[in-house]
Amino acid sequence: MKKLQIATMARLRGVAAFLCMAWLVLANNAQADSEVRIVIDGGSSDLARPVAVVPFKWNGTGEKPFHIADIVSADLRNSGMFLPMPVQSMPEQPVNARHVTPQAWARLGVGNVVVGQINPTPKGYTVAVQLVDTLGASGQVGRVLLEKVYAFTQKDQRLGAHTISDAVFKTLTGMRGAFRTKIAYIVQKNSGDKPYQLRIADYDGHNQYTLYRSSEPLMSPAWSADGHSIAYVSFEGQHSQLVLQNLFTQQRQILLSGQGHNGAPAFSPDGKYLAFSSSRAGGLNIYVMNLQTKEIYALTHGEGNNTEPSWTADSQRLIFTSDRTGSPQVYEMNLDGSNVQPLTNEGLNYGGELLADNKTLVYVARDHIAEKNLGTGVVQFLTSTYLDENPSVSPNGLMIIYSATQGLGKVLQLVSADGHFKARLPNPDGQVKYPAWSPYLFN
Image 1 (cartoon, rainbow, N blue to C red):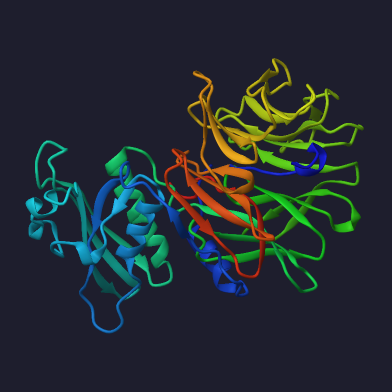
Image 2: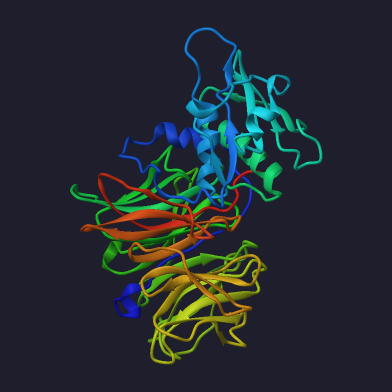
């Protein structure tokens, strides 16, 4: 690992509501770039729950819309919690719950079946979806657990499919799905006069667009709490500066510039503060900016190098990296900088994020993504890829996106929080770094 002052300067996150049409306008106006797309590297059929998403029946004429059922199936698979049955292995392909034969699916160990029908409308489609219990886990074999009709336009078919996925996931797990979220990341292209690009995409890599291009390095995107803006580090002007850019208007605002190194922005979940690291007073320390008053105050005061802040879910404490004891470790402190406590103490550890349960720390250890139960002290290594860094957790805490070295470049990787599901999001036109998972974007 590089020295802390160089190898840090990065990572973060965010929570709240979005405007669908604004995203569509941005996506339609964006220049075409090679997209990142999920490539499955591994999964666990022993732990994932078998499920079936039957191809939805198209009741219109002409060209069939997007393969909505395929997207729903992929979403459930990508969560790491479900193992969708291949279409060719299905014992039947019913179009509604009445036509589902529970025993046929139960014999194959499939406990839930999703069926649906797509009908054309003047503005797009309606999709009638039903989720059937085929094993009787709900207390009744054949019970319809979810029955709903969704309407969406032709342009937002993927968003509509992700909406269905969220509903199915919530019904089966009781947890909120994160399939309508997005990721931000930095691409360093192999050529061109502006090779550094800040890009946004759906969580699965689709609908990618470039928010900003620069001839100088860009780093460490972080989502605002409402999901409307992104803060990031720019080296334009030959020094590091913190930039805030609105995703809808594209307007850029320089928050901090010209005073030493400024990096690793992180918005508090309540939307009131922006934490960051800076050498404005000499050493590298953690600062917090009040986003309303723009007042800045320091939380650390020269106890080694301090960087990579992230927030607890209640916005009252910060997680950060410090080498104050000689080697980089992950610490926790109150919002006023008091009560500093180490969360790791062996080896080289950095880039920490505490999950909403306040018990699980996700961080980088031995150049791999690791998870530590703070109650028991048990550490689980989630990845075996090379030189892993920049972990960012989905808002429901179930998936982690990070960057890893592959060959001579960097690619994005996905891993489930239990370490069993793994996937890549390769990009063919450059290195991909500093991923940041958005907050929830829809209610």
